[in-house]
Image 1 (tube, rainbow, N blue to C red):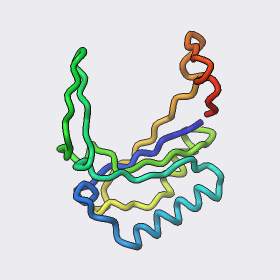
Image 2: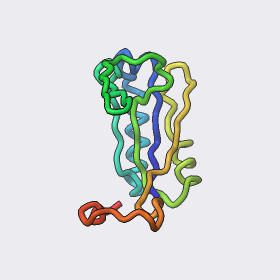
Image 3: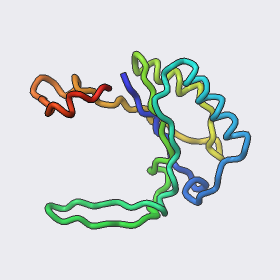
Image 4: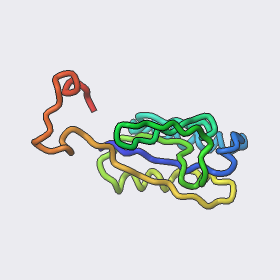
Length: 134
């Protein structure tokens, strides 16, 4: 099973302020443990929302909304994708992660990525999509 671990944005990450060197070192050590265990598939940080955009859909109309976006606690600052055997195993790994929140308070969300079998028997992808290995 693949899981996405979602790190929330902070005022600092939205302002483009980089974490201190010891925070980078702690995260690197954690990521090396994920690599060493063979479960890390991806790990990326995201630039502040001021450098992004949203596209709002309303029927056939599309409206582009330029960042920054309000309410940083609802924004994503980065993500990690791991492949483990269960949600509990993903939780156990997340509990080992360093807490990089400047004030020590944050929430990390864990979500299972959908696999082909999660869509049920009714889902029949075209041949090109079916070749993709998850």
